[in-house]
Image (cartoon, rainbow, N blue to C red; front, top):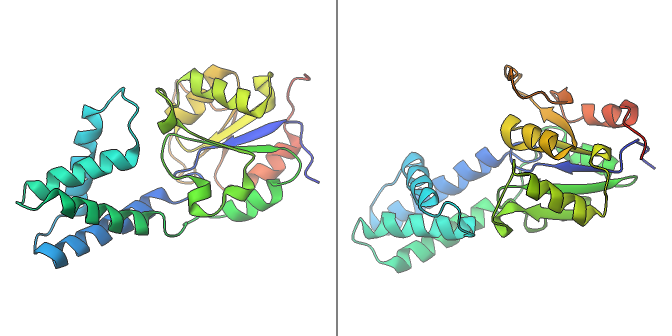
Length: 234
């Protein structure tokens, strides 16, 4: 039985628990290779991502899934080359098979999740679409919240309020949130009253304006942190 003073812990997913960048690059490379073999047109990973970012900006503030944005960007890329929209459908199939075909954990993530899976509530809170259920590690979580299902995302306090509501907890100080992004994760958690952990494996320079409650370099450090950190009584 895992013993801690906290009632729950929540995790960002991309670049905190899984290597999203590696998975995305692999999926985009597969899409690039397929499109070249299919049509003779070579599109680089950078061009794919640039077009996706442009489309995402056009949908800003709207509740649109990330795969819908990706598909729209594929449509623009293929039609600009005289190919049919149906080609974009096939391209998306290739992309999603690779993107969600396997999970690439960050160092120490799986072992850490195994230790946390009994003893306190565990949540996933992501702005992305790396759903643990889709990637095969949903068993580690009591709840999973993806901001793409809401009209707001981290660092907006409302998404953290959703987290507390889903956890059925009312004392934010007794919930700890872990993430790699100072703005979305640390600042968001701080503003919502949660305890924040900055996962900083690259040992980036700290921000003068955003102060995490805790900072770790390796996910294994979370275990001792959770056991020893003191928090206000409920």
